[in-house]
Image (cartoon, rainbow, N blue to C red; front, side):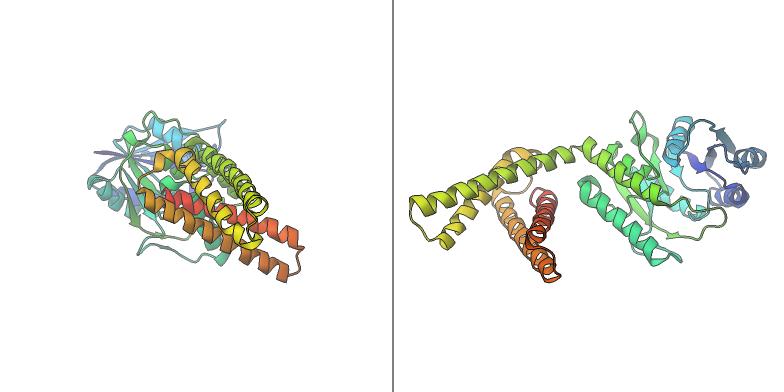
Length: 352
């Protein structure tokens, strides 16, 4: 098994010698290569890597026109000769000593092995609270928006290994830094393993996390939702919900004006008929490819989702009105949040 360690770089000259030394010790006994994909670093990272190639099995790709971590990794995939690709940063926050554990997970049957901060014995070192919040928030957004990765604890890790066939022939086109998420959505694999590691301190250079990075991440999630068909599903759920409004209003009018029922009591069967309408169309149309659970369980969970949404809507409405917000605006916000909650519960639970 030949290993290709792909390291995208930009101004990482000061870290290279230690990085190569630790990789060589970690992979002692393995047939491996190190591929540096450098975006024409002003500090001469690419040039120094070439010099170190006299002592280590290093290949250097200097890019003068393209920029970006994810595209650098993709270039590394194309140039690599290995059966297994390992992707890691050059800043030593990804300890090379974890590579053999990733390779063992591959040897044990995983197609993708992720060095994870968020499994037992994994962690981060000396992060400010807001950095932890950003990381956890990004993961939560990704897992909710893309159900395919909901069981992966660290889908935004930049340190992972995979078999060549996972990405061979796959059109990868990520935005920003989080290429692993793109691979997990588009790649050809059956099993993912997560190996604990502690995200360390940067040895030298500067962190590339910034507002642009975060916005690119959201763009990336949006594009993957479109690719996966999740945006189409959300639109269908919306249209079905609108049809439920007409069903509710129509039957409420019929029960009150046509049958002379009490206005308060008539709302109960009208609401139930709207729920049944929404369930039927969502089951036949929105989530027709996801009907894995028995009908009675889907119907029961759909009712629970509707109740949960109603409670969330009321709590938000009451809270915002208490804080002084105009009641119609408060109600609108409650409706929007309730809609999102109901969609997520139904997507992940009813038809999950």
